[in-house]
Amino acid sequence: MKFEAVTIKDIAKALGVSTSTVSRALRDSYEISPETKELVLECARKLNYMPNPIALSLKERRSRSIGVVVCEIANSFFSQVINGIESIAYDRGYNVIIAQSNESVEREIMDLHYLSSRSVDGLIISLSTETNDISHLQDLHNKGLPIVMFDRVTDEIKTHSVVVDNFKGTYEATEYLLQKGYKRIAAIANSEFLSITSERLGGYKDALQAYGQKFNKSYVKHCFYGGMVFSEIEDAVNKLMTLKQPPDAIIATSDKLTTGCLKTLMRRGIKVPDDIALVGFLNSDIAELMNPALTVVHQPALEMGKAAIELLLQLIESKRPVTQFEKRVLTPTLVIGKSAMDVN
Image 1 (cartoon, helix red, strand yellow):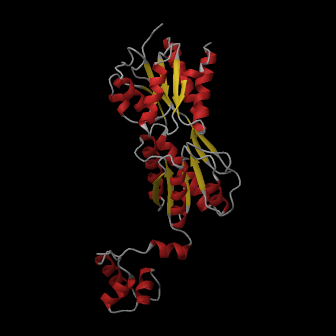
Image 2: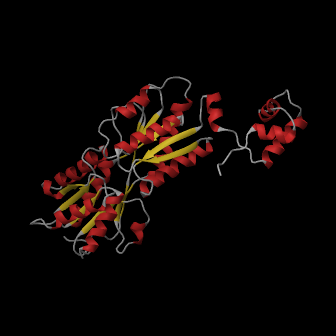
Image 3: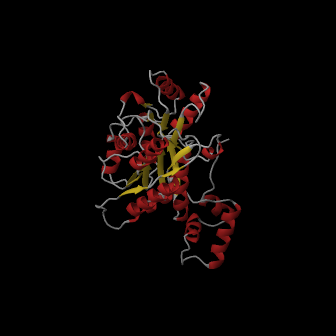
């Protein structure tokens, strides 16, 4: 049985009045008496009438909806960003439509086509790992769709963006391990194409240099799908541990990479921190529940979501064209656990 929404025709039929009378009463028109308005509103409540958002958007030229595209909703970092977005969007009268690319540029393009066809008022997006050509996004931007980018961004589109100080996050994580006495520190990172990858590896390399340690390319492994495919993390860890001089510490540069790395080490019977130290990027509370508790770089994901929606609403509600754009950089926090020991 096909669902059919209640319309003003149903209200008009139930009350024995015209549809125009119902429409005017719902709009609180001065042409309709208070008594009739009350009858119409009471009938609308009984029938669970809801205004048609598509019809309203055509009339007002606004849908009061925001599109959000992330690589994976189940990822704790992105779920916290979404919570931040919704907390403000809801209070400002906007609905949020969420789509996930699953790290596929093809899915990302399909998501954008769907959201634009729903006439969203604006878009918040973190690029997929496969996205090198952003023409699909640039086309929407050129047509006037307000866009804010976060986490994985590109400078090819002139708009607001919200990022974490990725360099600082890995610099402090690497420095922490160096101060503990570790010498052979490896890094497992996302795709080389992503902005966050180059920034995080930049912090890692600079920390090594600052402490007189030579950068060893063989200690850096990339996982193109950022941990969504477990086998690529498993392969990266296995390659590191079979080197002639395997690392004595690993930095994993994203949530999925951190948990996947720990899982692989456990499967190989390698104990943290007895056999190897592990520091990762992780926004889940699971870091504190692990034994030992992980030392992690915590990203202000909720604040990132709030900043992104605030900037987007500025674009949407501005009375004049916006020509000055902001790149907001938030500060990560190194949360000390027990996944590294003093080896000095």
